[in-house]
Length: 79
Image 1: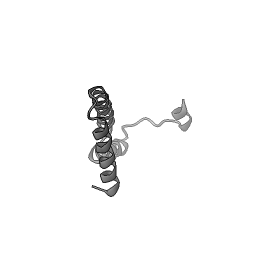
Image 2 (image 1 turned 180 degrees about the vertical axis):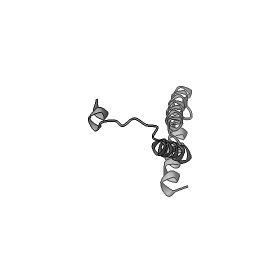
Image 3 (image 1 turned 30 degrees about the vertical axis):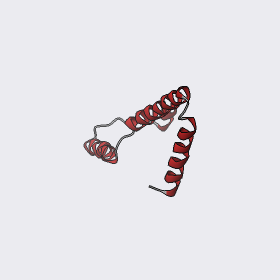
Image 4 (image 1 turned 120 degrees about the vertical axis):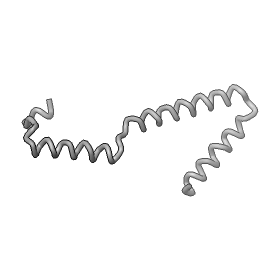
């Protein structure tokens, strides 16, 4: 864990300690953190691994070698 992460953890727990006596604020904090976590999870699910990317490139190279592709005019890419 980096020193920045440790500082952020400390700030997070200090803020939680400050509101810990107020059930309403704690519920809001939990809802907010759950929303942030679900957004991160959704973002992570949209990413592909390096292995998957290498497979895609490898498959594309194979198709090109076999002539299984249709050339596209550069102007058509911007349409």
